[in-house]
Amino acid sequence: MAPNVANAERERGPHLVLQTGLYAAAGSPAPWGPSIALDVLPGSVFERWGIRGEYRGYRGFEKGSVLVGALFEAGASRPQLALKLAVQAGLTDERAPIVGGGIDWSLWVLGPLGVSAVTDLTVIIDGSDTRPALSGVLSLHIGR
Image 1 (cartoon, rainbow, N blue to C red):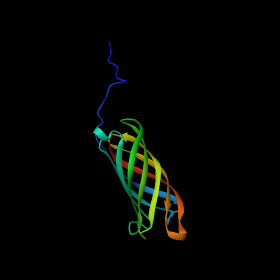
Image 2: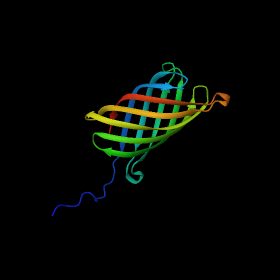
Image 3: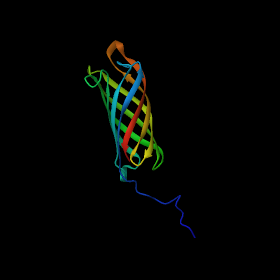
Image 4: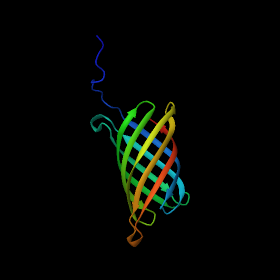
């Protein structure tokens, strides 16, 4: 008789993904720029939860925003596809608070190398100039 693998409990191992690419945004201080993100999902007792750190440059790398937040791996068909939900908060280069959330899908193409696409909605809180920003990021990534 074959074992019932559908109900087997597995301990999740750690996952670390470094993404680098370009973003395009509507409502942001800059319409496009570089993006670098690091996702850390420690596994074990944290199961599908992790953290994300991200930098988005407004004018190359001299100005931009830094975001840190929580990450939840909502679905995965590992080792090739993962869908993650993120909520983040941070600051722009002018010290304006920024909060938001989005969806990130990652597709591994060759071993630890792959592509990622992120769609998110953030709100830049800048006094009377508070505004939403809808953005998308397309990036290459390395990690598992």
